[in-house]
Image 1 (cartoon, each protein chain N blue to C red):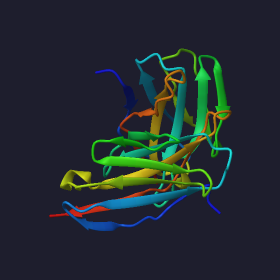
Image 2: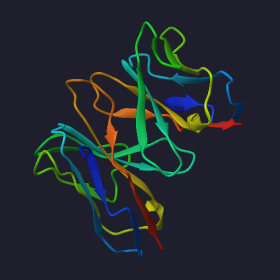
Image 3: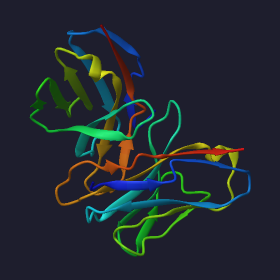
Image 4: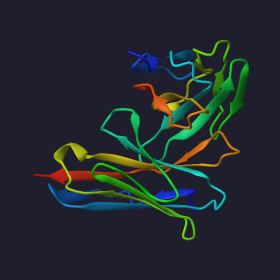
Length: 110
Length: 113
């Protein structure tokens, strides 16, 4: 079993729709969680951290479920510019290394 | 602009050649890492450093060396290139105090023939 698993997609979604991604992780001791966005042939960029109580940044909402060991990302009112691959990342406080999911590809269609 | 600078952006090597990928950051970040990214796989950690003079192996260190003589620079050396090292390489840095995520360089696309 992979340490961090994501549905690879692609998710084909019409503009304006709401889309949600899930990511599961295997290590229950994981402490820090992030969502990154990666555009085609570009470097990953931090989208948002994920906090225990859930957090929102504009149209983006991230949630953490420690009991079930998954994190989610919700995108509301999707834009064409949201088309990208979304990477789930998990980190243990005692470990400097991040564990990366392979990413979920999102395609927003006009 | 502040950030992580990687060079070169593209490189083609012949099997057995050696080369160094350069990485520099101007944010005074203590943590720096090298990753490789292959299709269908998550980023995999090659080597990392938690400060000048300190380096350690990641998940896939074989065939690569690193050094960290200054806070700013973290070069990655391919000792004897193999086709299996064809990949996109990313250097990244992070400030452990703020615990923000990593800032990445723009990547090096390496092909070994």
